[in-house]
Image 1 (cartoon, rainbow, N blue to C red):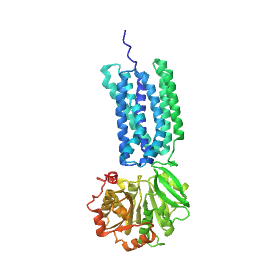
Image 2: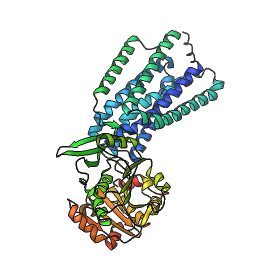
Image 3: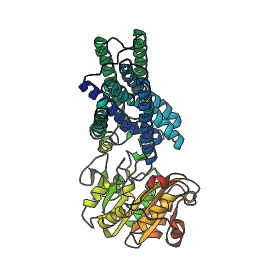
Image 4: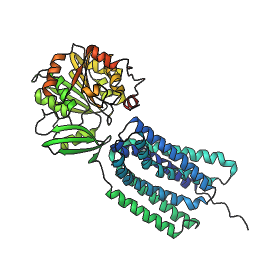
Amino acid sequence: MEPSPPASPLPPKLAAALVFLASGAVLVLETVALRLVGPYVGVTLQVTSAVIGVALGAIAYGAWLGGFLADRQDPRRLLAPALVLAAIATAVTLPVVRWAGEGLRGNADTGIILLTALAVFVPAALLAGITPLVVKLQLGDLKRTGQVVGKLSSIGTLGGITATLVTGFVLVAALPTSVIILGLAGLLAAIGIGLGVYLRRRDPVTAPPRARAVLAAVGLAGAGLSTVAPNPCDIETAYHCASVVEDPANPFGRVLMLNSARHSYVDLGNPEHLEFAYTQWLGAVADAFAPEGQRIDALHLGGGGFTMPRYLNATRPGSTNEVYEIDGGLVDLARRELELTTGPDLTPVVGDARVLVTARPAASVDFVVGDAFGHLVVPWHLATREMAEQIHRTLRPSGVYAQNVIDYPPLRFIRAEMATVADVFPHVALIGPPEALAGEEGANFVIVASDAALPLDRIRAHLTSTALEPVTLLAGADLDAFVRDARVLTDDFAPVDQLLASP
């Protein structure tokens, strides 16, 4: 019995295109996975690390499996089915993550890794197997092994780079996650089917009709599941899965949900109403610093539902409120669904707060509100001493900085952030629930800082009259005892996500 002839290579351009596509598709999945899992487990450094780690693991296992099969099967039999299977796995990712995400919502590290694995691993592994299959087909001359492998490897890397840039700069900003996922699945399916037809005409060694029918049925089922999967978003912006929920206890109350977290509360009938405790504390600081009716120039780092700018406008007519919001989609959503009216007294500026504050003139504002979050975490570059120095520069001599921070026991982040702000401002105080300050529970905290002596008695009086729940104001020796030896955060060292996570 004579050995079967070696499989004929693909045309070089077709081989390059397949490797470029497969490698690029993996990076599209990796980039979009952050947005797919974000509504359930947040968008933190741990989540980002999990997505990258799972994707790299999928690439490793997929490349090994593809090479293993390439040595035992004719790669021409496997290429088209691998692409179609990857298409099906990509399409099914959407409903699987959305159903599983509801059960894993808020879970710790295990839930993060499991959900990211459901989002990435199977389709990425299937796609990673394409390159060794193509390489096997193209190795007709052992004297050109290095050239063939090196060329296809570089093409795959270029595909990944291209996909990363296009997805991050174009697709995510223009299309919902579901459209990107299903569009990628459709592209992979079309190319897989087309490749199968091409290979059958060239050399009839492809999968039997029954296998093709099974793949088609599974693909249709996956597409059907995607249409009925629960969607946690009313709208996907460039940064968030966002929705606006009515308050059943208040016909004018609206809650802005970002990645399934209660971000802002807006009373459409009464802008002076502050629902969340931390906004009541911010309002008390503003009232103690500048009596009601006194005009001020305020700067807000983070917009969300624009609750505090509305409050300052309502209680201090003639004030100016400039709001730095990185997500232009949230500004549009607030205009559409939260009745946000902008003008000289309330001006949103779309951009990164660190960049915008650095470019702002010195001594130009009276009151700075720090309320920028990536899910539940203050973005690290807004939590450093260098950022505090820029805020200090923009404040007038009697101005006040009030920063909202979220932390959980053992309160490592709030202590570090408090030490950081105190390293720049000579007068500081901290507002928080007594149980949270004692390390018994997680909560919001508000840091208050100024070059001038803080009106502590007035702040306490306003907190007592406005706060609906028990609240404590720490200053002086009590605050020093709370902060202890916490390390100041800098641009060179700001492990915000790790400090926030439980040990």
